[in-house]
Structure formats: structure tokens, C-alpha cells
Length: 371
Ligand SMILES: *Cc1c(COP(=O)(O)O)cnc(C)c1O
Image (tube, rainbow, N blue to C red; front, side):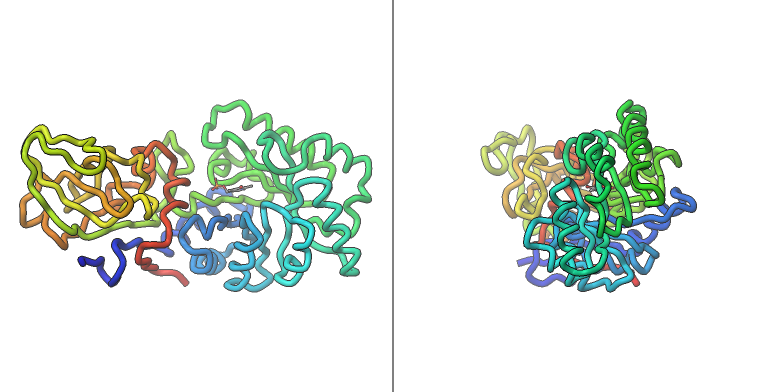
């Protein structure tokens, strides 16, 4: 079968530009001015590989890292030694204390129960244990709700033994600069912070950093912008693209007017049509909602997706291309060049975050650049 460059056995090639990730980190640092910048690498570095991504960001200067799960943090710790700090956003369960200690990880404490658990672990360890505290200022998702913060203010001994390194909260609408909830959350966070004098604070993720210095606090906390997704959806993307997805055409066929293409016969040709089949499908994270929507690039020109995306294959309309160009073995670009990840996601009815983190493990992966 046809294979991609440097990828015998794989259908398609996903190229990850580590230098672009480092460049994006530096751009975020410049935007933050004197405020340092952490790196969020949950979901295996947004699907791009937590170890190479983590090493690249540490080399670019990141000292704080965030994952969602403990397992992700352990994987990152294998690549990055202290003094790099790794915090686990989803917090801690009973029974996981030893793993946090063994791998030198910080739990993000999200409620009074987690605080009590970590305090008991500190007592057991006979030393103060470092942690991050998350406050809910309007997401109603994770973090201490206002009533629990009030309890903590009244009973500060609940934090004894906990070496609080950082207080965080998370914005719900940072990608909509005019949304009133942004200023409301900022105000709530500022008011809540004074319960923890001298403790650094972090509020802004990727989009929040672009809301301006009033949102920067003491640490930026971007994820998706590092990987090239536009953190300012209403304006041109300031970030460098990081991923490139390309494949080779497997087969080309001519169909007559009236014939259909693919499952469900959802595309019926209104004229004689040339169809190219490429080895990318929804099992590769190329969402089925992309069926008959959007296009790939062949020699820089759009080849529209025809009919349904199937598990392993996509069919493209290459009628307008010369046979010498639209031929088995020719390379088509699914993401890259003039076809941005954000545009591909938008055509699939979703956001860059979902498309990126869903790209999956079936591609041949090529890393470019890096430390
Ligand atoms: C995912 C996440 C981030 C990073 O968000 P991006 O929008 O990807 O920059 C930061 N903080 C928290 C709490 C998160 O869950």
C-alpha cells in the first residue's frame, strides 16, 4: 500500500514543529511582559506528545507545568526533573498521596476534602507539602466554591502543613473579550486572593493572556496557544502553526454523472467527477462531521471532501486537477499551509482544541526542531 514519507506502515504523517511551540511560548512570554509563563500540557501535550513538548517548553524557559491527570504528570516527570514544578489540575483522591510524593508533584486542591487529605499527608510526611489551590470564580466546574472559601477564611488552620505555592482560577469566556463575566471573575478572584497574602496567583490561560495586563496576575497559564490554535478567535491568529497533517493519494477514479460516493451515497455527482481516496479517517480523529465539508490541499489548491468521512478513508474531489497531479502517491495536505487547524475544526463544526486533542496515535509522527 502507499505510505507517507518516512512512515512505512502508517497511512498519514503528522509533523509537529517543536520550534514553533518554543516560538509560541516566547510570544506568550513577551505578551505577559515581566510575568512568568507556565505551560499546560494536559491530554498528552494536547495530543502532540507530553515528553517532547515538555522538554521543548522547559528548554524555552517554562518552570511551571500543568496536567489534568496524575498519570499525565508522572509521564511528564519522567522527562523533566525538579526544579520544574508539575501540578495536577484535577487534584487528588485518597490513596494517591504517595504517588504525588514519589514523583514530586503538586496537587491542585479543589475543595475542602482535598485540602484535608493533603494536610493529613503533610502530617504523615512530617513536613510541609507543596500545593496549588484553585478557586471557582464562575466556571462551576473545579475549585473551591465561595462557601468553602468562606470556611477557609474562618478556619485557616485547615491549611496548616500545606505549603501553598500558587492560587489559581479559570476564566469561562476569555475568548470573548467583551463578555461581562471576564471582569466579574477577575473581581471575584482579586477579592478571594487576599485570603492568601503573599501567595502568587494565576488566572489567565491562552485567551486570557490577550485580555491584557489586568488579567496576568503573577503567572500565565496557556495551553492551546502553544500548539498554534488561535487564542483570539475574532482576530488574526498571532501564533505559529505547529501541526501539519499530510497523506498520499491511494487511488483515483472517474465516476459518471449520477453516481454516488461513499457510505450512505450522500454525495451524488452532478457531473463527471474525478475522486481521490486518501488514508485518513475518523479513526484518526478526522471527525466524521467533516463529511462533505471543507477540503484538503493538493499543490496548494483546494480539493473538497466528497461524501462521508469513513473510518480509515476520505474521498476528495480532484476533478479540476491534471491527472499528472492527482495521481496515486501524490501528497495532499489536510492541515498545514493555507489550511489552518482552526479552519479544519470550524468546518467540522468544532473548535481547534477538540480537533487537535483528537488526532490520535495512528499517524506516523515526525518531530521537527526542538532542544
Ligand atoms: C486547560 C486549562 C488551561 C489551559 O487552557 P487553554 O485555553 O488551552 O490555554 C489552563 N487552566 C486550566 C484550569 C485548564 O483547565
